[in-house]
Amino acid sequence: MMPHQGKALHQPLKTPVEGFLSLFEPLPLGLAPMAGFTTAPFRTLAARLGASFTVTELVSARGIRHDPSLKRSARYLQPTGGGKPWGIQLFGRDPDDFVFAIQRLLSEPLYRAASFIDLNMGCPAPKVLKEGAGCSLMRDGQLVSRIVGAAVKAGSAFGCPVTAKIRSGVSPDAINAVEIAKAIEQGGAAAVTVHARTLDQYYRGRADWQVIGQVKEVLSIPVFGNGDLELPGDLEKMRVMTDCDGFMVGRAARGNPFIFRALRGGAAEISSQEWLEAMIEHLDASVEMLGEAVAVRELRSHFAFYLRGFEGSAQLRRQVMEPTGRDGVVKILREAARRRKAV
Ligand SMILES: Cc1cc2nc3c(=O)[nH]c(=O)nc-3n(C[C@H](O)[C@H](O)[C@H](O)COP(=O)(O)O)c2cc1C
Image (cartoon, rainbow, N blue to C red; front, top):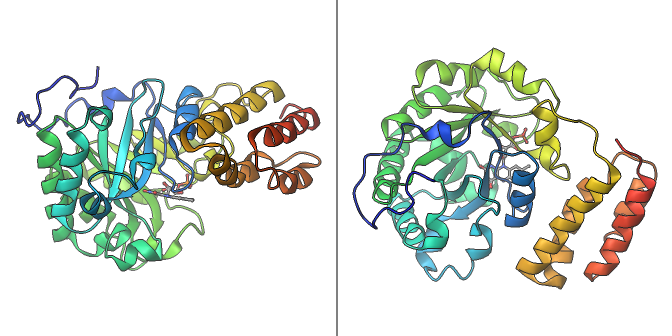
């Protein structure tokens, strides 16, 4: 049972920091939030295939304040199915926006089922930076303290832990993850995830895992490492280098929800049958959530990742962009499974 389930609304609780990590044991290995990719159907699939927790893509706290009916944001906030822990990620700049959004979400049983609220402090998208949100927050440690303090207070009233996801810093000469992570811990957060790249790196270059180790060294709350986890053996390498408590995997999971199994040291081979079933499960759950036309259109970018690395895959990637209905897509996926030998 999640620590906050069944608690009366607005009943003040001690910040549920202790024991946070035990939600994700034995090996805390999560699917990192990715806009456009970590939809509820994909999160559910990843959780079934070995992610111990998942996080929604970033959702605007101010957007929730302006649209408390959640008409525009509801689709991004849908729970991950299957019962594993999941978090809702919010972005913004104004502490009051975060408080409003957290109270609004946690007053509703559907969203109160979330295991934690994560605060986005790492997004490099110009649209988000323009609002002074995302990774911009790392320029202002005092504001980070105020946001985390306010969010933790709002979450605590519902027994819901608050976490934050940061980058190494804004630029190579402004690596301040340690200072920001300390402010986050002092604000009462339950954990910090460090994506070990700077803002100006965007997603380029290699992540510098040493920064994760520097953060871990000074924090008492759990630290999750993120950046370039791709291959069996990578978790071990990151843990040896950083002593981090858990992990988050982003891009390597796109079109490959089996990555969690491989990273855990399980079977790296994916049979064509299970590969096909995963894609169809992803498609059908998306059709159910979004309707056929929208789901088929939106899943094209996912299939561009699934259909890679075997003979004829480039042609199939082009073909899968064409159908407008579910059955047309499935026909191409079946053909892909025939052509693809077990990898
Ligand atoms: C398409 C895309 C969308 C992303 N969206 C988010 C997001 O909504 N919130 C967030 O905190 N990070 C987001 N990220 C960053 C990832 O969570 C992760 O930190 C980053 O990709 C590094 O991990 P990786 O090397 O495993 O991909 C996004 C990354 C990508 C590629």
